[in-house]
Image 1 (tube, helix red, strand yellow):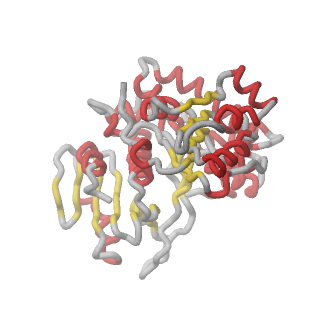
Image 2: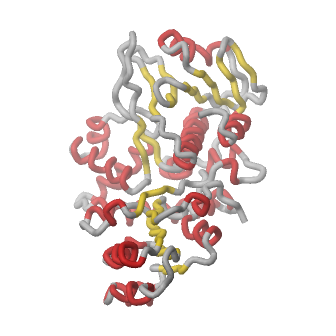
Image 3: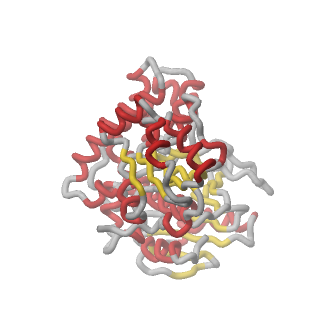
Length: 379
């Protein structure tokens, strides 16, 4: 059994909403880290039906518990009416809650009680390298880091089911769209643009819908934690910079399945795109788990010079290359970046197993980079 690096049990002070895409392991983490908590599982059909008919049952069940008793309500969006009872129990009886769900969108969309700041949101991501003994970069690049997919003997079959049941059904339901074919096409086009600059007009033409609709679709993917847009770095000194965001699905395995990329081979463009996605995915998880308040962005000039990730106000600049030998040409963009931001720390992450420093640029083998990241030595 894998031990998750995110230790919610060590930082839980009051109540929280625990959000994360399906199959990231939220329920498993909660049962492992809070074995003594009162657990209300709304995936239990009988319980769910009873609470839907009479939400006040939750209050009756818990009102006599001692102060600071911890209660976990799994899949709270299934019966959002319970949030009023949770509110009463926190305010009147000082109980603590972990309220678990895939995202807050369903709660906000229907105007349900989100507890007015009495429960802060926290997030669980797919696996990270530090959680996997004998971490296999190529397997992660091909199949992603959802626990069931990375560990499975046949991850492709599981990915197929995940896409069909989760993305194509639940996300469509959230979208409230009439043009389901257009939305399904959008999911595929979004995969094609993963890691690329988002051009709403071009995507709209490919999907046969308006640019406004496409932007709303991206908002849905953001809100449901299925994807995220990374903004362009805006602090310009000399060069004119591109301002369009980049988009990434929450897990590289999702992109690979939507684009029919199976068992990717090193040296191919497809592997390169997926490798970059994996590194971005790991850094995003680290920044959330370690509460890093710096922004994350990318840097691109109108002449096409680009650096994949910028942390904070040009504090750290990271280029991601899937090559097995770093050459001078792979350092050019960071050298240009250094002309404008000489005080930045500059890193190239690659498959080159010899980690070293060249011309004030740290060249790091991806496994060395991940290890140093989780040790707190990068950001």
